[in-house]
Length: 352
Ligand code: ADP
Image (cartoon, rainbow, N blue to C red; front, side, top):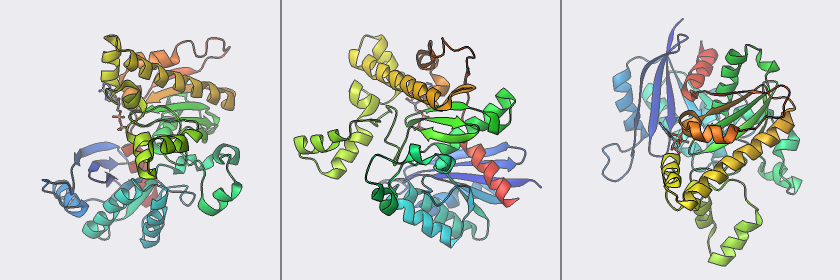
């Protein structure tokens, strides 16, 4: 039976949507609403925004929501009921910027669409297969037991989509695929996938760990945080802001977080833009090396995300000479990520 599945990605002041006819995978409509609740905006809240979207779409069979943090509770897509809403709300402590925004979309849909089934698909769920030795930090073990402090990993929907595409490209069953997947956008992460399961990933407790990103610093010596706080007399909120919004490509170049302009500036001889680019590339190569050791044998290295899909020179710089000494070289390719489609597929499988 065909179903019209609406996929919602709800941010703090935006709703992105894509409407699919499933199982045909046809995109019927897509769009977004920005600046919800902001000064001067005509749209007060998510409920009003959603009503506007639904007016254009007609009958919907089911809604699939992207939810950033599923903690250790959610390993797979889940039909949303009041208990699930409470659990997502409780996980807001782990993702204060994302989960409340995702919940606004879910609650608005519940209010407007009443009995239409809704499914939550979690960005962390794909990484719930990480072994303990990859997800426990070198902190007192009680911190994990009491406060759930551990590596969760993000971009899971995108990395899982890469795995499904790998099956098509390699013509192998999922449980025979070893994959290194690089999602390189403004946020960037890399995953090691062994026999079809995520076994390590560069983002951590939050999406700050790992690669150098548009405005996020990625890996640091943790002692630097308290050192900088004392040095500049900063409160925790301010250091969070610096690490998340003022670092990365933007912080190093002093120009922008956008790789297009970093490259242009570097070509014109701007040394800090070149340095930002070099660090971005170097760190990804370092992770690919580490994950090659983790996997032993790599079938495929894939790139996706705004930079991965569109910036050939960056992908070439990352891949250059990587597997030169290998007897059996992995395939390297670029795949356009379609997180919304994977959400629609998962919602369809659950509700059909
Ligand atoms: P987000 O993580 O916010 O979803 P994107 O995946 O859109 O971000 O990635 C943003 C990055 O991708 C920017 O650095 C930008 O330079 C690059 N990018 C996005 N689209 C293009 C494009 N069409 N051509 C070149 N670069 C692009």
